[in-house]
Image (cartoon, rainbow, N blue to C red):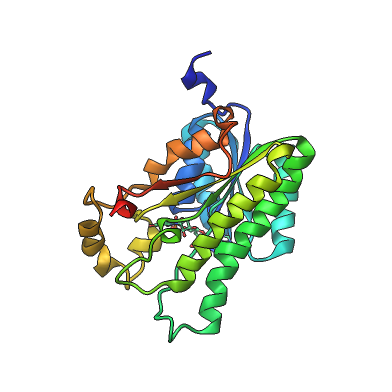
Length: 258
Ligand code: NDP
């Protein structure tokens, strides 16, 4: 079998949190195009349903919408139970849901700090823990967390200390789980995108005026497109990445090189 066939995900069962739009939607589409059945998990069930229907129509795969708020342990557990009911197993889990709140550190409210940490870090832990339990039982699986280049550098000019801290936490959580679960067959990696033109960026009145500045700061002089993260997602979800665990993949147009 050639490498392209080995990279296919036929028969694999995968879920993606924050899958209704943006990076999560593109990851879901990418793994479905590679042959996987996918659960689109999101707080916005209507948007998740639209996305699931569109990806299923385009790829012919089973794509189902599921509602869960990743900050709520019970909702995460119920989501995992629903994925198992529909798909019987979980081969790969993308813990991708995340938000960004910009506020100067000296003005950031407790609620703002807590909301970012709850979704971006605690949400990833709860989702990875619940998926990890299933994968340990199965004897294997792949967990892929969405971190950010903000785990490595401090973005400017926007002040986003909670976001940066949460994403640095995601990388160290990823490595910790990778080590704990290495001998149980569960691989855990993270993807760290640079600036990507999704709703998180394009719908934020505070971020849109900064786009030209970010382009100027990026050696390739443009934002990334969400579909440019699909290939790494397919690789990490599949069987050709068996020796890849505890790694962080920075995909940022060389932003963090300078
Ligand atoms: P989007 O805002 O476009 O999509 C995020 C999705 O997650 C939305 O559908 C959102 O639903 C959902 N979501 C938010 N909170 C929760 C929750 N508590 N439980 C379940 N789902 C939730 O963001 P992106 O696609 O841009 O971001 C995806 C990930 O990529 C995030 O972790 C982000 O930090 C990371 N990232 C993004 C970069 C970028 O430049 N865009 C760069 C680096 C990392 P709703 O809209 O209804 O709230």
